[in-house]
Length: 177
Length: 177
DNA sequence: AATTACATGTAAGCGGTTACATGATTGT
DNA sequence: ACAATCATGTAACCGCTTACATGTAATT
Image (cartoon, rainbow over all chains, first blue to last red; front, side, top):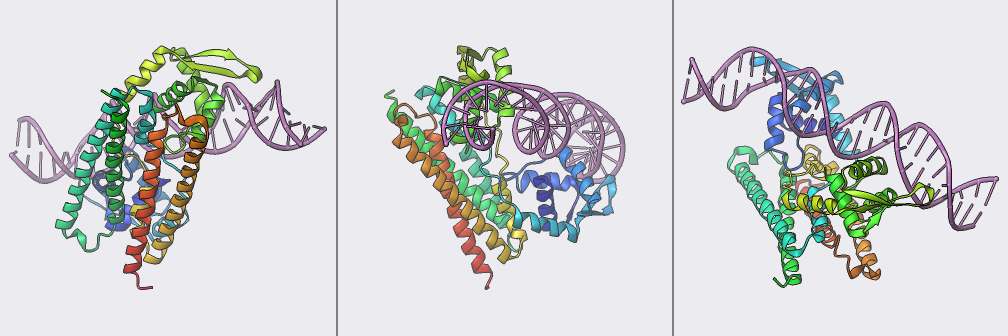
């Protein structure tokens, strides 16, 4: 059901958008929180329209359908956010890797954690670029949407980098290479 | 494929275990990194046995089958950890919620973030309890397995709590309730 | 004229959840 | 006797990914 909610969230902030636009928003805007491809989005929008959560306001060129959130949709969105109890810890490949490195000999483990650190550093640069884009664009004014999530992403990524650094240090102390 | 790897990781650290044991390990040991239920585990173990990654060493009482990792299994495990490139950012309901709170009015948003903070605080207590159990048990000696993941979990959770605190503060500044 | 970007859909298959189903052993 | 725990399996369903499939408009 989370896809539906994410779509309602995006529509609620943008006013209206096509499936194509929403697919791009997933890539650009909330990519670090959620992902969805067009093959998932298009059929879901059709179902949401059937459920009166969105309407097709306009059909433009190239078969473009512009969806708009309804008041039912806004109500559903609000209800979900307010009522939803997150279902515990998520699956995280990152955490799984962290769990498994101790089964390697220290030299291999260090390689793996170095790679994890590099990945996180690349991600941090990406997120920081997103920040800059937001600031330079006029977005800053009414786009609190995404602000808190971006902040969370930055903290999360910096934490991961620090963990990697400390873990590498710990592994190096253990292996007198 | 990650389930298979997680199972190999658990078998690699424990020596041998039944499907039932492994299901419990998921609950108790790596619950914050990965989850799997018995209905997923049992068939997967059968497939892994067919692929010679594990063997059934003993069949005990109540139909209990004790699985042991083979050298093929260890090789597969090592290969995965060393070669695997994590596929970008994970789906996180927590981050999705963070993304959506700006679509609420500040009063509702504050309620939601307070609840998120409470959930993280509960989780932190759980993780800290796990730490204590580990220390008190003789586990400390050879159980580096899980140590780094636990550290990551603690950092992650503390970060989430701090984010929630700062976000509540920010929301309160914005709403002159 | 060719390429890129826009734009929407369908289908097969995989990984995972929930519910169904069965039975043995141990503790009270 | 009864309940809890141990122990293994199957089946339906859902969400998501990957690949297939089609066509239009703008750019170079």
